[in-house]
Length: 208
Image (cartoon, rainbow, N blue to C red):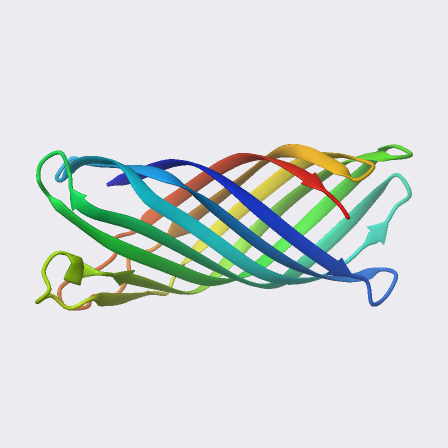
């Protein structure tokens, strides 16, 4: 099966510098849109509610080399996704709601290249070490006699990156995120198969 969606979202980042080289940062993001579902076995169903949010706490250090700054960081992240497939597909198959949540350890580095006195190119690459996942399937949406199922996921990884042109308080540039999560455990003969998620986008930011 596959889900494809075009989403709009908002990011909020706040940072403090307890020491001139060290920083602590919090990230909060939310994105929503309508997803199109397709499956060789179940048919198609368009316009499904789909949204996700993410919360991260990071600690890092800046290494200033005059022409550029290198900032490695790590921390803890939490990602939540919701998809509503209730209703019938093109073949008459009935869908249900699904929730996914991941916790992970991010390990990344940001390279900031000074272009001029008020401009720079900021490039980030990050690896996300998967800690734990939870997949809830509301199979009671199919029949009130069915029990909702919660599957645990224990292995996977994520990769993400971005490149922003920053000038004064504004920034603009592309980003990507990728997740590869292994098959879940088995509950009531139901499991979440191995899956991948790919996201690409364009972000415009303003620093207060």
